[in-house]
Image (cartoon, rainbow, N blue to C red; front, side):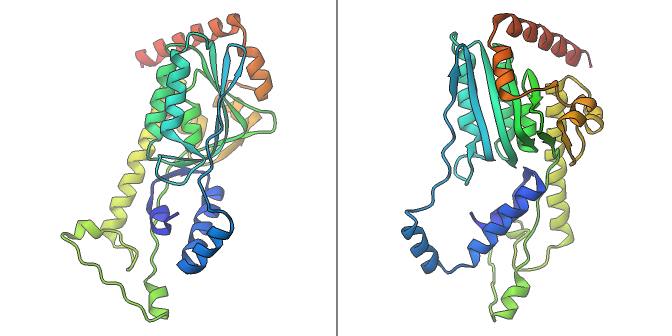
Amino acid sequence: MDRMLASSALWAMHPGFLAELLKSGSLDAMVPDSIRGLATAMAGGREAAKPADPIRDGSTIIIPVTGTLAPRGLYGSTYYDTLADRVREAAADSKVGAIILAVRSPGGYVWGCAEAGDAIYEAREAKPIVAVADPYCFSAAYWLATQCSAFYCTTSGEVGSVGVRSGHSDVSGFEQKIGMVTTLIASSPDKIAGHPYAPLTDEDRAEIQASVDESNVAFANAIARGRGMKASEVAGAHGSGKTFSAPKALANGAIDGIATLRDVVAKYNTSRSRLALMRRQAAVAEMAAAI
């Protein structure tokens, strides 16, 4: 993982998990290439984790959403485009009665999240698609889960961490200590805005803040659409960065119930339950349209 890219990217991820990810990336960047290459060869090479395959249970398909969420090309455990394709395929499959997203993710990159969320929301028109936090669903994963027809959390689970963050790494002090100076030459100052070889300027900080704010608005709007509420009500029910236990999330109205993945699969593996959910989501859609 590129340390500079990771620190400056737009993230929708639980802060604790992100801190460990960035720390790991920073330590990796300090290792000389020759040593890193030898270690990789001895370990058989490091590859991104392959997304788990969907599981069929009767007429229900269970799609795992695990680990760091990322667009293809960046290191992650679940790729947004792969998830979106799987959801679309299941929605179009007449043999599938319901789609269950089994979520165990701290979130991930903002890049690609909205598109995957749109695919999930659109699938609701064809059949029920239900998310289960098993046992945690944070930030970008929460964004996706709220686009489902219904959202549950397992008994001991936790959800939330709504919001977006970015950052900046200033390595100029480190370079001074080792007697190194990096000079950037570009066609325009905008081409090297926010570079890591000097302190962050006020102008560049404002640009980064504007990007964070824009993405956070999109996050809130997505939750409002998925949950049939006003964007102004999102923070009150879903928080603005905090995480919630299953009982607290249910009390806030952030989730639709407390149930294990097994319970949810059993519940929606019947035609009667699927019909009831589709009727309810149609009512939510009417309410959202009226707002």
